[in-house]
Amino acid sequence: MVCDVTQAFGHPELRARASAADHLADRISLRDHIVDVEIGAFQQERGTTQRISFNLVVEVAPHDAAQSDDVDKILSYDTLTEAIATELAAERLNLLETLAERIAQRILRQPQALRCFVRIEKLDRGPGALGVEIVRTQTLADQASTEVPLAQVVYLSNAALSSPHLQGWIDTLATRRPPSVLCVDLPQSGVPQVVGALAQRRIDLLAIEQNAWGLASRDRRCVVVGSRTELDWALKHGQMTVWAPSKIVLDTVDRPPVGVSHGPALAAWFAVQIGAVALTVIGETPPVQAGVAILSLSVCDPDLPTP
Image (cartoon, rainbow, N blue to C red):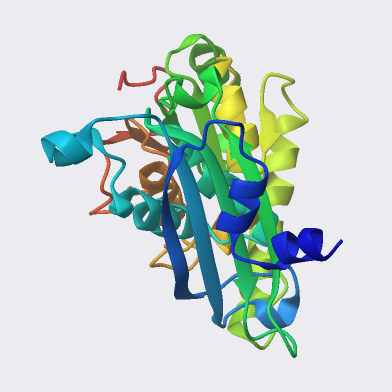
C-alpha cells in the first residue's frame, strides 16, 4: 500500500516506471512548468487567470541519437512545451481533464512518442494543489492526419433572411464544397439592454442564436452547431451548418476585437478562427480588413459568387 500511495502522489515518472513493461523505454520529462491560465467551469474563474502546474513524462521509441549525437532523431523538449502552449491558445477550457487529454494526444502524434503521462494542477483554487493525471498510449489513430476540414463562411443579414432569394441561395450552398457555415445577425426585433459589458455580450450572443435557430427551422439542411467538435464533424461529413456563437466566442483565447453586435465583423473573425477559404457577406457592407478573402452580394442578386 505504501508503494501504491507513493506512486499515486509522486511525480508521473514514478507511475511510468511502475507500470512499464519488462523493457524500460527511455523517457523525457517536463517538471513543474507553471503558466498563468484562464480556465475553469465556475463563474469566478472567468475573466481572471490562475497558476497551473504541468508535469509531463513521455516514453520514447528506441533511437541511436546518443551515439550519433543527432538532434533530429530525438523527441525535443520543445514538443512538450509547445503542446501545452498550443492547446492553451486554441480555446478557453472548463476542465483540466480536457486540457490533459488534448496535450497527450498532441504529443502522441509524434512518431517517437509511445506513452504520455500528464499531470495538471491548479495551484490557487484551494489549500493545496488540485489536479488530474492521465496516461495515454500511442495508437495508429494518433499518427493519422489531423487536417482541419475546409469551410466557407456565409453571412446572412436580416435583409438576406427576408429575401425571396434565400431558398435559392441555400439550395446552391447545400451543393457546394467545401461546406458552408452560415452566420446570422442579431434579430430585428431588438435585444434587451442591460448594464455591464459581460452581461450584454451574453445577451447579444443568445439573441444571435435565436436567429440561428429561426433559420434552421426553415430548412432541415441548416444544422445549428455551437462547438468546434460539432463543427468539425459536420464539415468532415459535408454538412451545411448555422453557427451558434456563444460557446466559441466565450471560450476562445483570441476573442473578437469588435463587439458581437457587429455581424459582418464577427463572421469575419469566425472565418479566420476556423481557417475558412472565403467569407461571403450578403445584404450588408463587409468589413474592410477581415484576414480572409471576402465576397459581397446584394439581396437583390439571386446568383451567389463562387469562392
